[in-house]
Image (cartoon, rainbow, N blue to C red; front, side, top):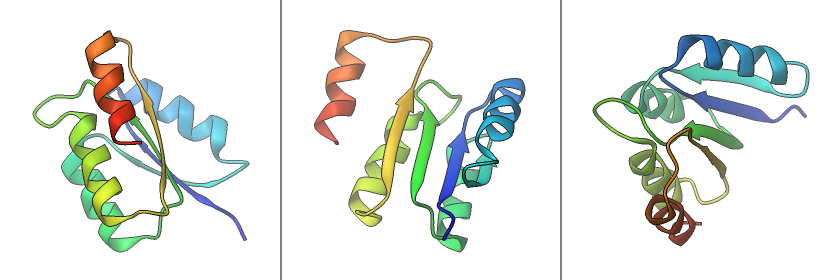
Amino acid sequence: MTMTLLIVDDDDMLRTALKRKFSGQFHTLSASCVPEALRLLALEQVDIVLTDFQMPDINGMELVRYVRENLKKTEIIMMTGYSSVESAVETMKFG
């Protein structure tokens, strides 16, 4: 059975490149923002969420919180181009 990967990033080019990269290994879904990702999570069973931290309006940390609280078996990978020790520690606290 193929695992499902949800890629969440507001950068269209990066999201498209990641989807292309992983499409041979996973059933890939993509969202450009957290609200769109939440809609997909309500419709599809997702095994892995690959999300950007820094996005407009609602950041990836809110998505991490939602997944941890509601989809306990879903794995999360957080990526960012704007890292800080504080954001890394906060993300790690949520698993």
